[in-house]
Length: 84
Image (cartoon, rainbow, N blue to C red):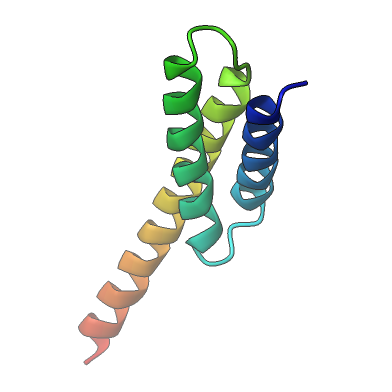
């Protein structure tokens, strides 16, 4: 396995980990960033790098995490403002 593929695999492993462990939205953000960077690297590699499925996983699950976290934050802020 070449060095570039090994680095991509490591980045995607962390992206998948952080997509599952949301860490109050920060993990989801890291997963999204990893997915975007991985897709860009894979598309620019002209077929040398693999992992597009894992990159999509990071984007979809990380995006879902951001939506859930952002929605929860919006509900909390709205509830606080209504009670005042």
